[in-house]
Image (cartoon, rainbow, N blue to C red; front, side, top):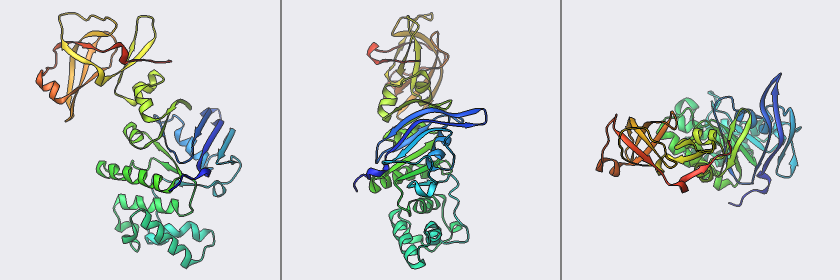
Length: 336
């Protein structure tokens, strides 16, 4: 399906304050039409407030919001062309799947036969047409989420907003629903804006990852760019898989944990530009790779990821002295 032109989102100098507390601090963000965007960051960073301002469930304290070619910060939620899927799903326990999905059309005065027919069509889109007549209590968590998705999509929004939609699911279902969310987003050609705490979830789903801290955007870029070229020390550490290292001139660089090699080392804790002596502090076997933590003179948290076959060809033990080495080409400079 073609991308809908009316699904772009732009925030211009958007601020949200609660009394004297600034939750979102003058952020600028452009989300192109048909983008899967993940808002990512620790608790209290402002991502949920940002989502709710786009939805119209929180007033914007200052700034502007555009959806498609319309400025909408003063419009009520129903006129914005958005739909919000809540974390709890909030299905009506006494209504079957069809009537749950059709509920918003009922509130808009759509005739019963028409709204139920459209609800069945939308249940088919999320592969839940077989369960149309069941009550929520007769469904699994993943099935309930699909019904909640169908209900959010029944009004044909240009932007779907998702607040931690996978957090209540077990790991297997999370993986399945990630695939389903991406399929739907591509099939419908609309913009999805998805709030999450999970770095892996954002990397797997997003075309655009927006990492927030203290109400501000630290970096907004495609997932591969964020992982290979984190803008700041915070981004490198929050995304994980990087070591933040201070170099001789006092600036910082990030080096990916899987770009570091280990060789046996002599006594001492030597630091020399692209290598450092270290002691193995801990090891974890992760199947395809072994994750190690090292004690070094560079930083309190120094991690190395070694391919499983390479590690067991020359295994290490906790307490072993090693030299960690990396190429200067793999040291990415950080702005802060």
